[in-house]
Amino acid sequence: MDQDKRLHRSKPLPMRLSMRSGCPYITGKTEQRIAVDIDFQPSVHDSLARAGFRRVENWVYKPACPNCNACLPWRVNVRQFRPSRNMARIISTNRDLSRKLGEARPTEQHYQLFKSYVTSRHDDGQMARMDRDDFNSMISNSPIETMLIDYFDQNQRLVGSVLTDMQQDGMSAVYSFFDPDAAHRSLGTYMIIDLINCAVDLDLPWLYLGYYLAQSQKMRYKARFQPAEIFRDGTWQLFENNDDH
Image 1 (cartoon, rainbow, N blue to C red):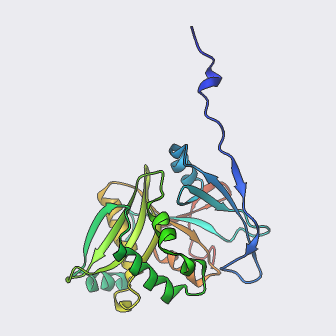
Image 2 (image 1 turned 135 degrees about the vertical axis):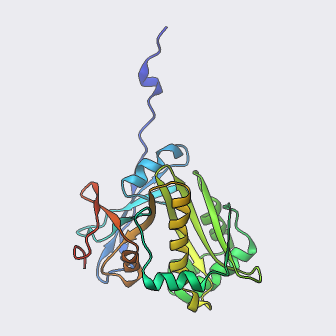
Image 3 (image 1 turned 90 degrees about the vertical axis):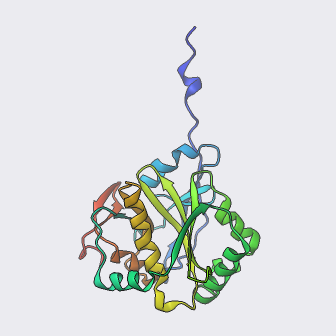
């Protein structure tokens, strides 16, 4: 006997609207997010990512800020990306580093590197208040395929890590942290370049880098990695250099 097809339809995921708070990127603006818990339905992650959502632990979110659409989801076309001269110098500077791809299992070494990074870069932010349990949850609490990509110097000292989600259409850089005392290496830039190379090796077309915000120095660096697309008005569009500057 045929069963009612309605019994096989998955329930819609409940979406939550966060409380309003001050925007950490634009003075005088208000931040608000739409968030979805995907813990019991992780298969929806990729479709939400393609719609501009980002993952934090078992949640995916998207800005829903009142009277502001400045944050634009950004993804790099890895097959067409070509490093600039400055990037080529950064690659050369870091030729001594070795890369290790592993499961998202944080160690004490990861935590100490993270604390050094946030203390140096974001001492006045929410990340700086994270304890070891918060950090462990950020790294390991993922309902989808996630890895930690680590970078070691010649002395096998951990100098950088990037938490990375694997998607059907690409890789997504969730969060990166690195040795603040190794400024000459430009590790933030180097790890993105290396993720682009990883995506090419895996025959994946995109590297998702989160949100681009032209008004914020912290977020504007993503424009260095092109060609790229931004998600706006419900569709991915080629980013034009003079469009958001």
